[in-house]
Image (cartoon, rainbow over all chains, first blue to last red; front, side, top):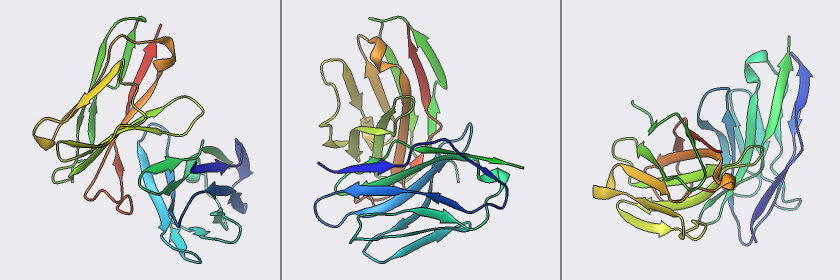
Length: 109
Length: 115
C-alpha cells in the first residue's frame, strides 16, 4: 500500500546550521507530495508541496525536490533559526492524504 | 479569515464512556476531514466528507466511531464506547476541493485521554 517513511527524530541543531529531513515514499501512480509543519501549541500547516517529478517546492527558506527515481522528497534549509523548532510531517496524496510519522526539530541558540 | 474551529480542546474520560467532538470548518470549504493522531505517529484519516456526503470512511472503526456533517457545514465525531487505545489528538481539517492538491487547513485538535 501507499506509505511515507521519515527519518527518526528528534533532530537537534544549532542556529544557522544546515537542515535535512529525509522522506521516502511508496505509492502506485504519481502522487503529489507535501511537507506540513506543526509548531508547538498550533495546528498543522502546509509548508510546501510538489505535484510532479522534478518539481521543487519552497517556502520560508525550506525546499524539497520531488525525486521520482529515488522516491524521495527530502526537506532542506540552509540556515535554521530557533523559530523553526517544530514537528515536520511528510505526506503524499493518491486519493487521500497519507502522513509520515513526523520528525521533531529542535534548534538551539 | 477565521480558521478551523474545534472543541473541546481537551477531554478526559473513562473507558466505556462516550465522547463527542465538534468541528466548524472554514466558511465555503466543501471538504471536511477527521484525522486521528496517536502520540509519536502521523495523522491517520478517519473520514472524509464532501459537503454532507461521505467520500471515504474506510479507516473509521464503525463499531464504535460515528461522524456526521449536517447541512454540509459543522461536523461531529463520536466515540461510543471509548477504549484506552482511542487516546489521541483528533484533528479536523477542511479544504476547498477534494483532490488533496488544494491546501488543507487544520484545527488545533481535541486531545482525548481515556483512563
